[in-house]
Image 1 (cartoon, one colour):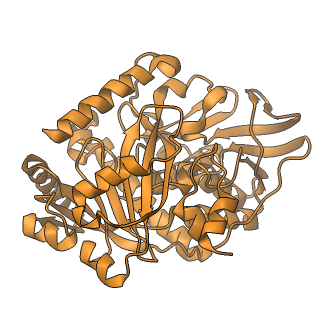
Image 2 (cartoon, rainbow, N blue to C red):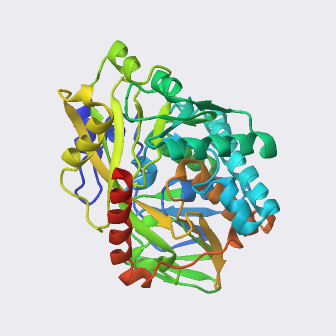
Image 3 (cartoon, rainbow, N blue to C red):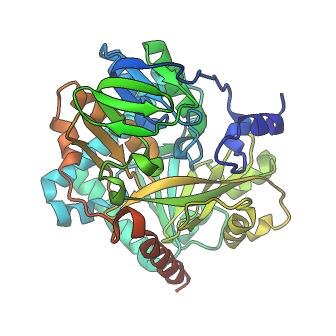
Length: 436
């Protein structure tokens, strides 16, 4: 079966365009829908990194775990993202030190480092073939950002003992990325990138092997906390001692009071035609992933078959455009004008969730409910860790879980219903600032 046929077969995202990830996934197991009432120790709602990681950790500890996914495993942001295994958090360590204090900031850095290590350990332990490669370049599009990045790199080296970052001047960045758009930046050798859908599917296979009962095509339509919790999935009911909300940007009607803490936004990616080894290496010689310093961020890397995967543009909308290709192509050509004649084979969008503070929102609610969400673009590593920390909390170990649960958060103005105008204004302001 060819890649285009696989893409058509596996595209199930509210009518959204098929992704290159779907077209190139190594294997796509199918799990049945829930076909009757069920009882479990823990019911996990959501088949992305958070839910899969949580379910896998629980099953390894002997918990009878049921995972419900509305569509297909990895159908949301976990299977449609830029694939970056980044260091730290969306907020830099200097900012976290000012806002939280030195010791909480150090704990958060340590957990972020553990998150990367956990992803790598799961890949190695379970033999997940997902094209894991080292290196992320952070490309500064203004000199002031290059100076800020250099200061942060020095602090990570001197205070946190993180020596995996090289500071790059304009020539150094040009050696990493064949673009005149950047004036310097960083190369984080301790970060990496991977095929995000293959990673999600690998976690799912590992979870199933560990005993997790995975059910696809099973939208959850209602939730009643209690002892036990009651989860409604169409005509069926699941009873569980604990329920994990691992829905992120797809919380929708299940909001038990936490929906206003996250903002679902749509981000877009394209995949070019195969460029060939020579042309691809000319763009990104050391095959690292790249992210720039714009408010509406651009991020890009090479695929295993030597396409350019380029992400750019954000929309404050609950709907995905039928063809995001022209929007992302404009962003790509600003960075790589030499690709003006290149064919675009795939273009797609996906919904992720951000928080007001850009730090993950992880916690528990009365009635046996746990949640982890709002990774704000750092989900490959932090969602994997978030699922593990929720599993630890359910098992009775709260120390590491509470590092995140105690983070100060504030809801978006207007709550779950009226937050969209705030986001639209923020994106418009950010786009204007990027041009200055």
